[in-house]
Length: 374
Ligand SMILES: *[C@@H]1O[C@H](CO)[C@@H](O)[C@H](O)[C@H]1NC(C)=O
Ligand SMILES: *[C@@H]1O[C@H](CO)[C@@H](O)[C@H](O)[C@H]1NC(C)=O
Image (cartoon, rainbow, N blue to C red; front, side, top):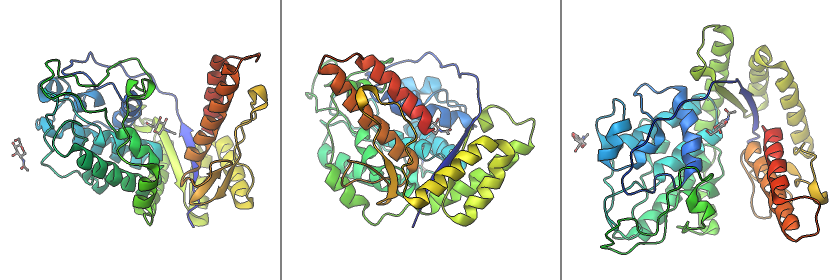
């Protein structure tokens, strides 16, 4: 059985300046959370000097402005995803790997409604990235079938690295636009400062598959080699970072160690103790709790008496109380879901009136809950 304990060592790093971005048919900010998640992974090691993940979602003319040394612009999205995935894997960051995969599957801008984007003709270094292509314009030929197959392929790859395969649905696109629309915008949105992204906040996402279809597609996909080798790579790079006083901010900004069994747990604990003794103690406590079936959700905030639901070992790895029929390979994903459930219930209570707290207070509590999960 796979038992994942994610031990995160985050070192402070100065903010990365973002470039001015050119635009074509604008929807490249529709899935902002994906860009925001890929950006720090790409920044860990960016030998091609790709300016920002947003350029891979633009048409070629605009993409050229931020492609660094990538000359085959039809492959900029794949190259960006591939590098971010490589970096996230080296850091053992399952969330980072998951979002690199999701990013690879997002639709690219094209010049007209119904026009499909060119498929990259190169092979990605990571087989997980190579298994996926981008969504196509929902008004293009066979789009519903094409896009559903992309989401199911993406779900399998996410499951294979230990992420939550249901997140594959977030790579989806908009309802089809009208062929011949002179604005070329279709039913899209593009709001640069909307987090997590206007396709989500404006409720414009069209699911390509049902949750049950995702679950069926990933049945039998085990989180195997990638997650395990990420753990050992991360342990090695943590050692290097600890030993190398000249290591740069970018290369050691974040290190997550995924522990898959008792033997590697010991090795990882040794590495970590050189770096962060306090965190090691917490991880060891979490490991003990997981083994005994105890509640791994340590956040105690409970506005309106609503606590974050318990997270316990079970199912494919971890389960969240009340979330029947779903389990998580990764404790971080389970803790995040627990915080989300609490946030929804808190906001419902605030909206029902007569409470001494607001939805804004629920947002603040959610931030605290997520911070505790890290
Ligand atoms: C892992 O990657 C995600 C997505 O980029 C990022 O938000 C998170 O901070 C990373 N975690 C660590 C511990 O570095
Ligand atoms: C891929 O397409 C580009 C642009 O059309 C072309 O220059 C390149 O030779 C092609 N590469 C392969 C491997 O087919």
